[in-house]
Image (cartoon, rainbow, N blue to C red; front, top):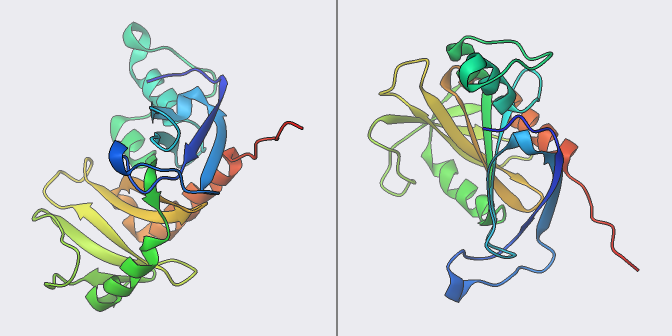
Length: 218
């Protein structure tokens, strides 16, 4: 983990595949971020179109989650950081929002997936969600995972998978949402499931706040 708040520029270029023989750049599909190093959990880049970006964000403050992790480690392995409180581990896990963007994960196929998910909706539950029904023509769920289907503001349906076997304080949920032509993977605490819309909106706001347009040289 890093507590380095030096800004770094990161570019993710779209590609249909990370497999070298099928790799090619997709014209116009690129997203650029300028964000502090402490946000970045993983930045893998072999060349343009082979990027993987993982970032960690605190849900309450939008600060890098690694700052809170550094403080929690104490003086032996970490350090105190002004303005960053030492949170209980359970609270830190609850506030930990993980976002991931891969070069080969475009948002366009999400609409076709949405059509499939429409057939997998069971009874409605809270906050624009439905129970995920395990049907033969529906995308699979893990044997120890539960599923919901959520509807974004533009009508897009997304699958939300949550851990069921893990203890409550360790259980996580995962889903995805479109951003700048890419499909963003989102991982969050299971206790936040009733607030999933808020979590998605927060994640989009964070990404937009760190997005920038490169200035082309003349």
